[in-house]
Length: 404
Image 1 (tube, helix red, strand yellow):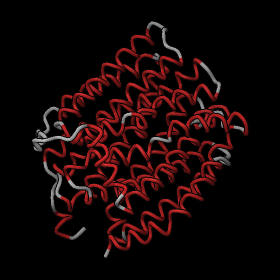
Image 2 (cartoon, helix red, strand yellow):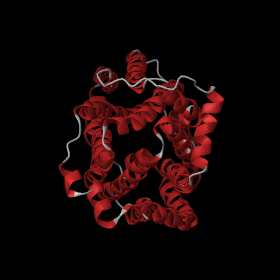
Image 3 (tube, one colour):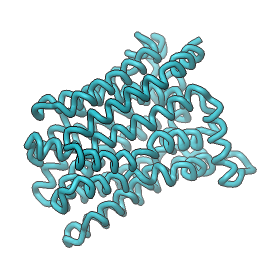
């Protein structure tokens, strides 16, 4: 980033997107803290707990490819606000069921699947629309801001609020989340429309195949997509039982669990704030590799956390590293993928990167049930380390070509 770039201002349309994300992500943080706590009132079986998480991530495997084709075919602004409005309706129905004491593990899994199905469309559209709102020179800053508010809302502000509200009544945090989706939808509806201009659209299967071929032909992005698949699988393998590690092994209460997640968010927020400076100082490749190595080390150490303070500090380090490498890779995709293919390429990348998360959730539950709650994170760290060693030569070579 040059001195001139640092003085450029992000446009007003971008800030409307940012505010919509801010409201939505605080609600998501409230929801994220409340769901595990509600799940524990129904069951403490780690396998059943993992089923809710698996259902939540399953749409990334099943729906990501057709969602990408929709994003390239229709107005992205409309897709975004409509998906948020539908999410508001889903959570409102869940709140009613909770109030009537009619929710169970199956119901939670269905709610998680429905919300995530909408999120697949929303996330692909928001990634594809950002370069239309922001000059290319400011993408790192804009993406950093997006990750900062997402982490601040989902991990820092929302979780303690969610845990406190859950202590008041189980229905309250879900009602708050429904309201946040509605406000976000209203803000997103004010963004400029850019209808797809191509008069002849290929059939859905051909459109999806076009995005798959483009990603397969780009060595760096396909390597990063494969590494992301392993890393997100491992993240869920460890993270699916973090609520059990905190509450049962380290004896953290419901409110303390929300504060633990909030403390962990500090690292994620910091990663979003400083990412552009780090990349400008040391370069994208060193920043990417440093973050990936840090993730491996931290995952191995989390399983040995002696208390909640150490666990929170390690989760914060992991959040910083994850945000840093996420911003680098997202900005890279937005810069190199053609505008007319952004939705489909992003969707293929996300499907590969997030498609194994349901399996990671199930494996994490089985590992915890078989080897103990502490075992999931070290196992995940070891797998991430092996994957990084395998991918390292290709990433280094390809990133040098991009830099040149």
